[in-house]
Image (cartoon, rainbow, N blue to C red; front, side, top):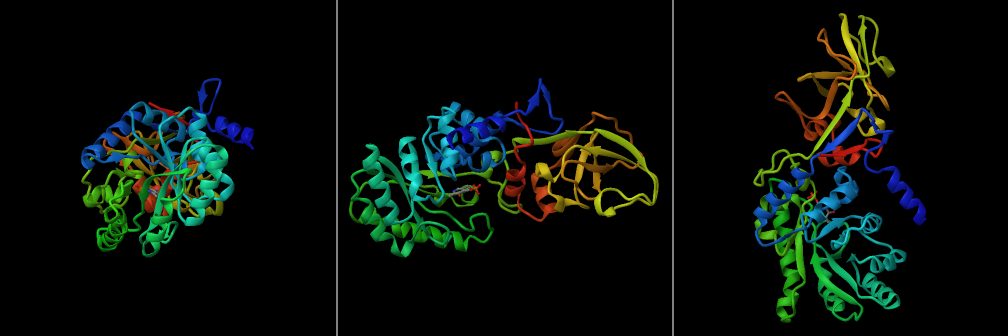
Length: 388
Ligand SMILES: *Cc1c(COP(=O)(O)O)cnc(C)c1O
């Protein structure tokens, strides 16, 4: 199992190139941009620690490279969703504290403790299990307690939290380092739900104050809350998508200036003239009523360029936007350039900007009927990541 994880990691890693020749379709990540975004968030949240969230291959930006960079700029904590993501980071030599945010199963617990990964405990049973495992491993387990204040995903319900917090004080092999919750609607302009969750969280946290106990690190703010709910910052904030320079929703106040770190590019690999009455691609869903020039680009839904964007997507070629025409295939797609010129090897921008034209991951999200988060995490491992 271990060998497999390691092999998988290497084959995904980081620039898929043969003899130094990169695949013509690739993603470019600006690490300096990540630093700027991190600093802009830090500026906003004042004394609170910023824990960048690196789950799902660092929102498509490359787990290991982003973590290496974050460690280099001395971020105090990293957040991931799964044990396996934490293990990959430890294997890569990342020594920064790592909180695994997601739910866990019992057999995973010893691996957390052995690899200094901070656990999320979301029930008394889990705490008991962690305590037993920590005793066996012979090491303290570091734990953050998860309170469910309205997301109904994981965590002890806020109305049952007192027993949970009380119980957490009794385990000899557990250090309760943090206590946290998660917003369901912090990216909404209507903040009533988020404020209710925050109120419930504050109510739960009184447990410590009432008993004059030291208060663990408290956290609840995701990107949406960083942007519009300063009273939720506490000692730590957990921005994911904002770290990568993308806003969690189109209409949210852009109170922290960040900009995208990711550009997605490809190249023209074929040029032809298509006559009217000759439909393009699977299902013959598109044809022109006049002669057009059509280029083929080696990217498709097998790379994470959603097929659902068929009929809507555009790309930038030679500083101008052109429509993708016909069904998006698994590995290729066609672009109608009317009677403009283009040549094999010309750069094609899928996400990014050139000469004043701009295509954002929000645009792709709209064309695909999804959210920017899914656009980023959907760019799969067949697409090499290049770091600049
Ligand atoms: C994904 C996640 C975050 C980050 O969310 P963004 O909206 O990307 O900022 C924070 N906390 C938890 C528990 C998460 O699952």
